[in-house]
Amino acid sequence: MPDPLTHAGPFALGTFRAGAAPFPGLVTGARVRDLSGHVPSTRALLTDWHAWLPRLEELARSADGPWHDLSAVRVLPPIEPGQILQSGANYRKHVVDLVAAEKESVHGATPEEASADAEQMMDERLRGGVPYVFLGSPRAMCGAYDDIVLPALGEQHDWELELALVIGKAGRDIPADEALGHVAAYTICNDLTTRDRLYRPDLKAIGTDWFTAKNADTFLPTGPFLVPAAFVGDPNDLRITLRHNGVVRQDESTKDMIFDIPRLIAYVSTTTTLLPGDLLLTGSPAGNGAHWGVFLAPGDVVEAEITGLGLQRNTVRSHT
Image 1: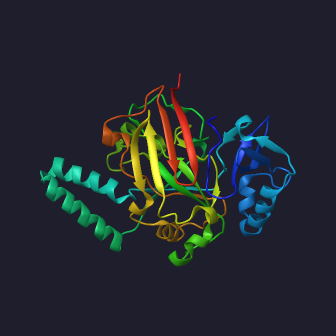
Image 2: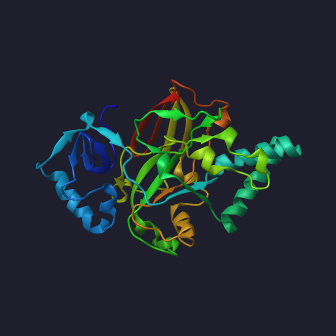
Image 3: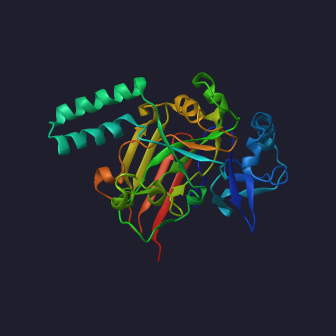
């Protein structure tokens, strides 16, 4: 495991393993306190989040244990979510680049015309459009320091670093101006995608195959921690940075979101009741491997960080 990581606030939460069984833990500095004597899982904390938050602050200050050295435990995905809701095409620069490239290559527009048209489309989408959201599989999750295992099929395995939020208060049809009150914590997700398995040539009328392209085992590194929303500050002003083999590939502010977190929550809650422990990914900024013409290969190292939420470091290996 990398050296103990810094995060916003006096403590963070996660799921860890020191022996046979995983346990929910409270992280302060280089130590983690086993909370299994209080709750069975990190997700269980969220079912009564507003009551638990002050209690967790007390436990973080207490010398009573059991405490473990963070370097001596395995860091697992910080939560087993109820739903994983994933927002696509939600960073302005990323989408503008994609739209402009298509207008140049397919429609013969000049770079200036293509960029202007794409910017206009984003303005119209922001005024009258709605987010694009799909479901992911919890089985794709792995820990922040686990290996990414490339599946046997496909070659264009790509990164997509995203800010993710964890719901701490149930709701349906949540107004945007009340939405942040439903967020318990934030974490980091790298929503990997096999680009050359995203479109089905045998089913052109149906289009994308999100299940195959995005849900391979280990294709959703999550964590290392859940950082309570109260410690994070403005979630619409965080820096997202991804390095591939030491080269910065994604480096953007969450200000570049087309639909901000309140609008995302309001939108998804018109379809599904949000429950404590649900995970909502907010989209990935420009700088994916497809943009650079570089994809993941065995031996690569991916480092991903978001302001105040810690760092992921995953090594890539083959399935064999």
